[in-house]
Image 1 (cartoon, rainbow, N blue to C red):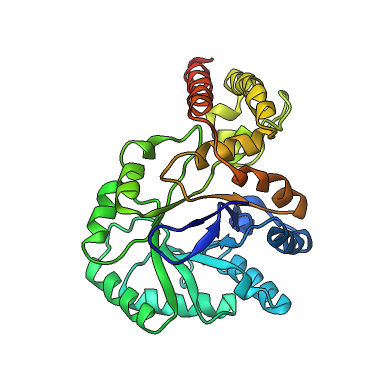
Image 2: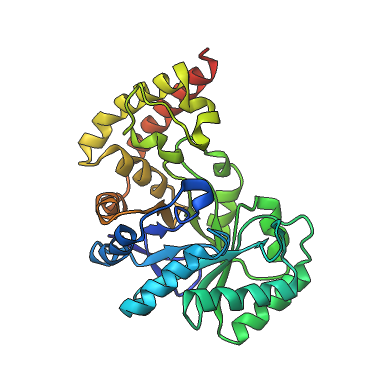
Length: 318
């Protein structure tokens, strides 16, 4: 497993990051914790030392599950831990909150749930239209001075929002959505991060599983994907054709289709890591080889063209 310096920080992280969004029962149902815990131990065996979670995942459930297990096994110091804040879920209905007092209060809550004395990377989970940058800067400065947070980042921010933030506080990492089917950030956000040496850790790199090629053509999606056009009817069939077209590239590099999709995003020079939601030891073991190398530029462009063409035709399919 290759490792990389995350932006300008002193964090040396694996190029595959162990994601914890799957511990959000509202979105994904109940995930058995036994196999998930074994996956965390297996992550170390395959060279993965980076875990990303958030307070909002299960309203604290993911952080608590992770903290309990790492403390029990004595594994905290073997991982770089990233978490996020943004959703205030102290009331019945959640709402965005990046106020100074909430940041301090929620950081303390995350530290308690994670059973740790510091967070390696603390991220604003999304853009808050009511953000007061000076308040954020004051909170970040206080947490860093106290040693409770080492570095700060943002998630789901666009280039203009990042530039605004940089006028007030350090941003060392961006966590955006990025995949073969979601490439909008190549235009503005990735060049900005590359130029400013801001680390980039991408999520949803397999486009909710579509880029794994694992689903049979007659599969009927019954979860949240049932409302997404590319997962239905002729559009889905066209995307499965594209997955077949990618198989020679995967075979050429000794990869599976999921590994190829992950390696494709890691080939971009702005990308630091790919976050992958892991449920089992087998899952982390099979995805890890994606982080061993990058693709030749010719293959990168050919793969991109196959998916771009398929997506355009799928959107026209009735």
